Amino acid sequence: MNARDEIVDAMEGRRAELPPPAVFTSTATVSQMDSSGCSWPEANFDPQKLVGLSLEMNRRFGFGSVRLPFSISVEAKVHGCEVAEGKKDTPPMVLSSPYAGKGALSDVPDLMPVDEFLSSGWVASVLQAAELMNKHEEVFKTVSIDGPFSVAEFLAGAENMIMGLLMEPALVDKWISAMVPYQEAYASRVTELCDNVMVIEEADTSILPPEYFDQVIGSKLPGVILKAMKSSFCSLHSCGDTIAVVDELSNLGEDLISCEASESPRAYTERIHRKCKVLGSVNPIRVLMQGTPLDVLEAAAHSVEAGFDLIGPECGVSPLTSDENLMMLSHYRERLR
Picture 1 (cartoon, rainbow, N blue to C red):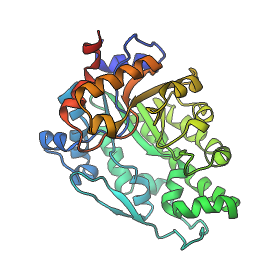
Picture 2: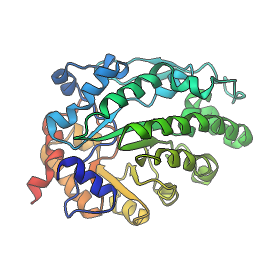
Picture 3: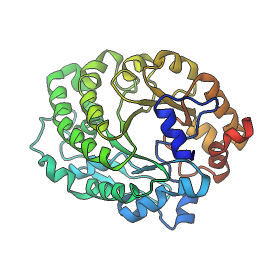
Picture 4: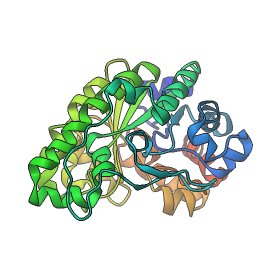
């Protein structure tokens, strides 16, 4: 059994005494860019370089998992948002949107047809990269897409959307609903090209109050998840504090959930209570980037004790993360046996 098979076993519910390491969030580091010859910003947009950099997690460190893309701005850019391409140590970032009203939520504009969205720009590049990476049968391949609410926030403006929940909830619903066909179609295409579709959605309760969860996420995301599960596993990731909604978040139909749970890992695993699998919960900044290999080993051991099914970072790997810490995470079981 290879490292990929171990991850498949975990996703299917065959939990090992020491769960396999895996990274489903962003994986690129400056060191991997140097060793692969595939560096940001070009490796965010060029399909060949995107695949080359993604595969370094397996080739350099032995992880059974690889993932692309390295940005959550893909859909927003194709819809017309201005996106900074970033630098070698900085990912792309949405700067502005032509649809974001100044201090108020604007109406939903006429957007491109779904077929055009799938064949345009950065989305088309990600799909091409996924096709190339799908040829690598030795690794467990994750492709990430955004959830409808996350895309709507980029297009309409995050502050406008949150204020709109109070002032114009029907218009907020209209914005999110407008994103659903694009994300369902994207999920339907991606699921044919990978082992796992990771849907990234904004469920942080410091931004989205828990009482709005069903309206914003619970009623819109299951359709995307269902499309993603057509030919692959589906995992769901949210940054931030989600403990108040983790019961609902883990009950949307996905195979696995990934949350920022390192501050209270057992509270998360107990609330999820086998509704789906759970990946975590090594802190990517305090432990993976700033800590030592011993810190990584201790965090992995605590995650095992808390009942996580896969052991990995709870959010994206920083580009400044050291090789030594990633190597320890990939081989943590050898130190604990």
